[in-house]
Amino acid sequence: MELVIRDAEVVDGSGGPSYRADVAIDRGRIAAIVKEGAQAGCQRPTGRRVLDAEGLALSPGFVDMHAHSDLALLRDPDHSAKAAQGVTLEVLGQDGLSYAPVDDRTLAEVRRAITGWNGDGSDVDLDWRTVGEYLDRLDGAHGGRGIAVNAAYLVPQGTVRMYAMGWEDRPATGPELDRMRRLVTEGLEQGAVGMSSGLTYTPGMYAPDAELTELCRVVARYGGYYCPHHRSYGAGALRAYQEMVALTREAGCPLHLAHATMNFGVNRGRAPELLALLDEALDAGADISLDTYPYTPGCTTLVALLPGWASEGGPEAILARLRDDTAAERIRRHLEETGSDGCHGVPVEWRTVEISGVADPALTEHVGRRVDDWPAARRLLIDDRLGTTILQHVGHEENVRAIMRHRVHTGGSDGILQGLKPHPRAYGTFPHYLGRYVRELGVLSLEECVAHLTSRPAARLRLPDRGLVREHYIADLVLFDPATVAAGSTYASPRTLPTGIPHVLIDGRFVIDDGHRTDVLAGRTIRRTPTP
Image (cartoon, rainbow, N blue to C red; front, side):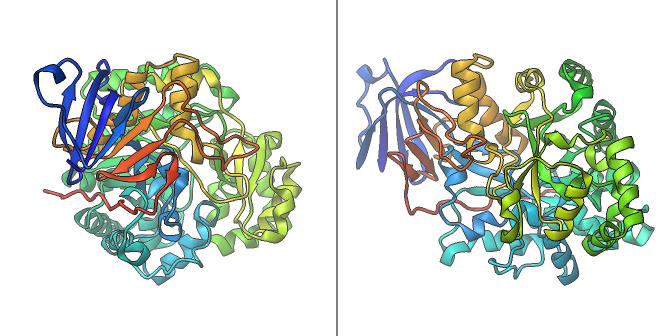
């Protein structure tokens, strides 16, 4: 064999009890598993390399169901932010905004719209236009060597709407809806695993339910799933969750709820209401899953807090309204008095808003500070040309713990890698689950947590040979120390790498070996083969 991992405590991803075994790997797959006790009756496997895993847990690689590494995988071959956590697969194209499918106009606009998530893209050759071309570009990245971790892609509904009809706040015409259907169809035929939406982000939020339902029907025909950032995580959260459940049931489309939190003061302690809503739908036959990150603050762009009407027409129209005193005062009233749809129907509390990154290096003095008031926010939006990212300290620990226990829960970092002080979830989500919520708090058992991070997302993605430690499965694997694994990232030092994860393999090749990043680029795109 190429590799034998000797005496590992195998946490196989099924949720069942762990067991001690030797695991042999050959040609990128798990070739043999010899459990302790069975070893006496057969020859233990041998390999060109034998790794002593005494004291270490061996699990499937972790799947980040909500990632924002759309450009990071192209600009950074190392990508230790995810590789060092044990992430072997990321799902990109989130929140309805990404870089394919596009034409020249749409690409320029989407780059502006999500500069705060991914940078402006000026350091990446954005030479693709279709979903298939983007996936090809990932596979051929870094001189044809590939990418750091595997990647799947969701067709972004907001980008599709921008492509088909610009930034107009109105229902689509018949021809426009037909064009959106074609764009979603093409993306799925080219390998996308589903469709995402960002329904508090423009222009995706302008789509009525009937329009979303029609696009979900396309997704369902191709065996994909719908992943919405729905219309409210605040004042209208439960109604927004119910809307997505009803919409996808009508369309016959599987539903995966993005970063399924219950935030802001109006939702303190209300996670059981959400879970009861989901249980009722699941018991009635709905196909639902969700992801969360194990932290209380959220992270987004400062411009995302504005009311939807203020964004109609795109980035330049937003800036024009911000510069106009009358329009800016109207924005302030929506933000501070009535609660804008961009801020989830809740009046903004500026003390909860912390600047995590800026696009203009001349404005770095603002990073790490809280926003004082609307005039300060307005100035920063204008000066930074909408590129500012923020943390919003609006979550509740009891909600976080309750939701992560749910039977359809999976892990997703929602990791924005931009900014001087990004959210620590970008570098710490998966070891934080294992260290904080398994070892320290006992919210989940080790076996349960690993299943949440591996086999459950693999099942949602319909991956037949990933997500479990099983013979003949692809050898995407993580070796970690249950006694020491922990996130190194904090709010003060968010780019610190985790501890207690000495080895990570993708396709049977070491991307982390003895705690160090190798030069291996074993990641490739994971494409759904559609059968409509």
